[in-house]
Amino acid sequence: MNRYFLFVVLLAVVLVGLPGSVPSGRAEEAITFRIASLAPAGSSWMKVLNAWKKTLERETDGRLKLRFYPGGAQGDERDFVRKMRVGQLDGGVVTMTGMSMLVRPMVILVLPNFLDTYEKLDRVRTKMAGDFEKLFDDEGFVMLAWGDAGKTRLFSQKPIEKPSDIKSMRPWMWKDDLVFIEFYDAIGANGVRLGVNEVYPALQTKMVDVVTSSALTAVALQWYTRVKYMTSHNSAIIAGGMVMRKEKVDSLPADLKETFLRTCERVEVLLNKTIRRDDQKAYDVVLTKGITATDTSKYKAEWDAAANQVRDRMTGRVFPKSLLQAVEAAAAE
Image (cartoon, rainbow, N blue to C red; front, top):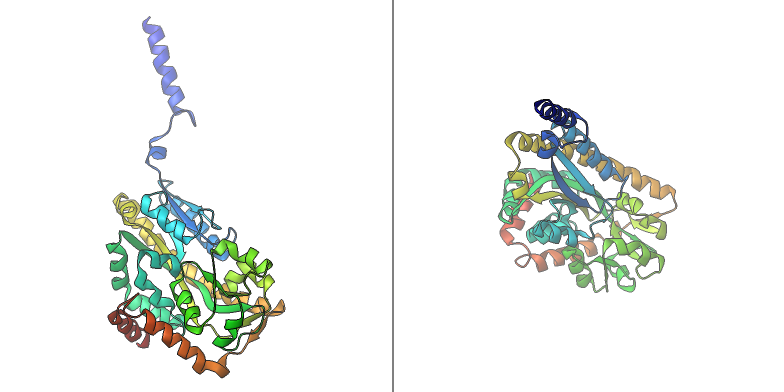
């Protein structure tokens, strides 16, 4: 009987040591963050994010993992925000449209003809980092890394030289984009409200004939194949970044949290460098594909007037005047 008992114990010890037999302590400790994005698989954004995923898993010895849901697999940015709030997602890589659903005043960074260069945008985000971080913290979120999606341009079936040209067209209006909803209302254009994943079919059927996009996004989502013109001058930078539920980040063990935040900083630098380079490349590529860049400089006064109207309408309603003044000061420095 004793020999039989000893045999059973030894067998159990051997089985525990076999791969896949009993979960190891390391497997039990593994934490996985679920992060959604509209960026298509294989795009510039996802290449950087997937490289980060591999680096993070290697540097934490597999204890911290990232699971990305690209290409709108989790819906539109409104869905990302809702799922983050209820805990179905831990984070999202979003544009300012998604960010503004968490912190409405953040749309100030994408006002037309305001922070229209990378230099201005970078100065503001660096100078006011603490102010912005507090706004997200108050809502229970963490701004982990800033990111861009290229320069904001208008892509269209007909040339657009001045704002009034759009009045006879059918511009796409992202359902939750506060800025362009205001812009099209200000110039008297009737926008067609659609989610991002609905835009390409709408271009195919001519439900819309104007889209707001960067060259890189237009290529990634194939929108450029359905238009003939784009504005040569950009009105803003499509700013965004990665946000995550604060409680998820704070719940990490100290060593994992340090590694996670440190690698986030590296991702921010690499993302901005990669996207800005690739957006310029995409702009050059679509020109070779037959898209004409329309000069809007002759009507700069009209564009500025429309932009100022948008800014005036949103000041005091979407963001306080004090924030506008602070951003203006930071951009000027």
